[in-house]
Length: 174
Ligand SMILES: Cc1cc2nc3c(=O)[nH]c(=O)nc-3n(C[C@H](O)[C@H](O)[C@H](O)COP(=O)(O)O)c2cc1C
Image (cartoon, rainbow, N blue to C red; front, top):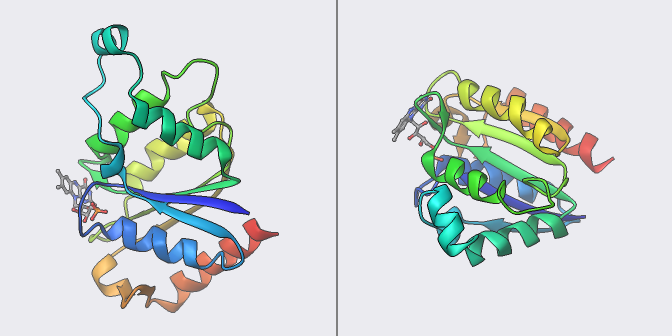
């Protein structure tokens, strides 16, 4: 199984990148690549820009990566109850490529973590409502609250949450 994984964050210390990297490591027999949204930074979407300059090359290459994958792991940062601007901008550009879905119909395993107790519930709700309407099956949803207490030394330290994640991974691996 070919997996791409990324965080919906451009922070160099992203806790969502740490979580999604750990989740990717659990698919041990698969080929997984952790992407960085910073490598796909583009102008803020505007219809004028799209008409004048077209879809940026980096967005086209990100789309090609999602199309070639069997599974996409995404862990979303929550900013003011919803997507980070960086993730939403990337999503908006991806949605403008003609004749394909945002993630090219590749199934998505959706995650979020935050320092607080809600574990990104707001952004997960937004994405859970949207991603299936944009063509990708959601094969799992996982939230890790209180990242600082529950994630230590590259792993989930909370046994119950770790088991929950591992069971979801097992189910997806089939
Ligand atoms: C502009 C901004 C808004 C934020 N809003 C929320 C929020 O609504 N809910 C929340 O749980 N955390 C919020 N946070 C804290 C983030 O969850 C925290 O910065 C987290 O580290 C973001 O994930 P990342 O490290 O993967 O970028 C916010 C942070 C920023 C910078």
